[in-house]
Length: 379
Length: 87
Image 1 (cartoon, rainbow over the protein chains, first blue to last red):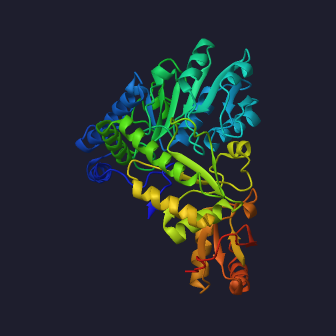
Image 2: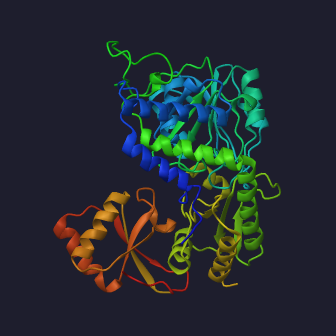
Image 3: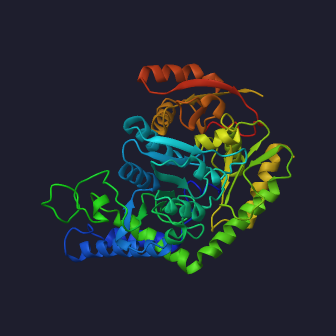
């Protein structure tokens, strides 16, 4: 199989990741639940993962790294735990349902007022729109770093400066950028950075989290056992236990930790350049094929390693099925949990076929994918 | 192009259970992405492709077992059918 669905999850992981998970499954007890060696082993795994995550994302406080199952859980905690009823929030058309649905819920249930920075037909947003949409009661901006559909990179540093100047909380969805390009929450002015472990960070599914700037208050979404302060009626107030209830996923976090080690050793810019190079080669190969339409702005080299396309008026699901069955190429068709972006691109009915690349893909795989698209298009 | 018959579902759990049920009853099917044009708002991205000759047997099996699904839809194929395999 040629796996080109890395924006959904990376299939190929470093051997060190799987080794770390297997090792943890035979050594790790329950983190923060005792002082015997296996519990301490688990606590060490989780602590190391916090330190490495903080270093990777420029978070000054490792104890402000909170682990969750994925980005969606982190975004739900951030959105539902930071926003107050009736406040005003600015978000964008680029967002995934992991941002949109909790925001819509807050809108319906708590009177949160939403404004959207609209995307144009190429999936780009006008950053000046944040200024136009700002109101005296604007409490937060929730924004993706990279579109999961087009690979468009949002200038988070500029939005971060705007947010800081105006006292607005900035929550960033780094699902598609974490591990694929540098992300520094201090340099970018990010207050809450939400990430997943199983995509660019090359860790196992079931890992993810959030980095919280010092001074940012987020209410817990779930409460329960923390292994500490057990006679308190409510969840501990200190991060990270404030937002972590129940047994930690030490097995998964051992893998995430190894994934971050691999990224740091390889160099995130090296990874970024390779992935971009693969995506660019694919784009250059398909863009001249008669009947192929790509989506997004390819005039800039600075993009996420994603190319979304359609062939003629073919249903994107049928194209993806043909790629899978006839060519052994795994892609993602349909809506990509990004309904507003598809509406902006005009692909609401057809969907799009998304090709997304990882460190472990090869130029030969790209050539094969280009050839397959050409054959399906009848070129 | 020939018509293709898709069983659509509200979620993957329904779809995978249906695939097992149909195979247990000798009704061949193949998992395929659900075409956007027939998904509507209530179905998921997974569907089961079945042969036209087995539609009635599938319906009977579904009814008999009260198996949940969204709907069955027919759609003309758009790409040359080099991949009509029901395994």
